[in-house]
Length: 264
Image (cartoon, rainbow, N blue to C red; front, side):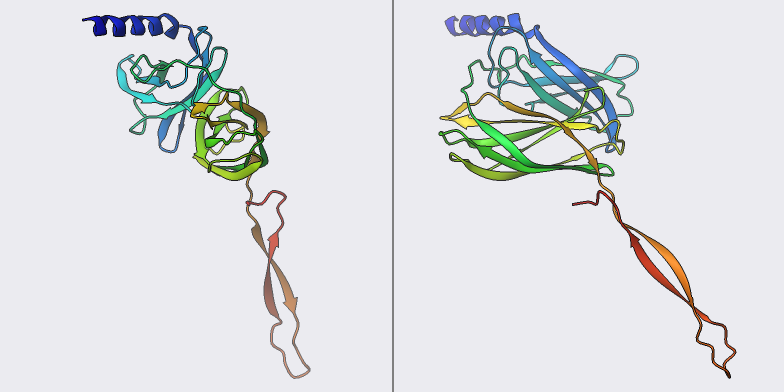
């Protein structure tokens, strides 16, 4: 009985601040034969969270529940005043889903705790959209004197109104002081420069088994990938002689047209 009371008090404490986590910059978008809800969960509760889940529910036009999913989000922590980022895709093609809601999941995964201070940075960033595929690459460097284990680079894709379209992440090798590793994230996206407008990076990892406070690198522009095209240019070659009355032959030369932003 005592154990049940303790658990009940702990859940009540979590419930007291769960309502003050605000979901913002939300967008539901159809692409990749599904509908995807992207968003930002901001913690204004006064409590510091480490492990946490985010619950997303899709509804049809009659406000009936189509499906509910739980995701871990993109970052390891959700400290007071900070945010985590997420995207969830419908299981089917999403034809019946017209709206969605999301919130901090009130479940057994919820764990409180504070982060430690780290020092990492990204460089050599390349962001290219080739039709419906967005490829993000770069280098993550640990500038701290403590080894950063299981480093994660979180990629947040935004539209031109700062709504979140989709997120993805990549885990690099453990990084000792002043060491680096490359990262690469490929995401399906709409083929639209307004919708796929810019990318933010957030990176975290563990120092001594404790997550570091996520560090940002925001506002990177998306380059549209262009491939070289070929044009046919015909030139006539006259090979007639005094006794040869044949029609001059035409030769065709294929000349690639240069592009200013080719695919990497």
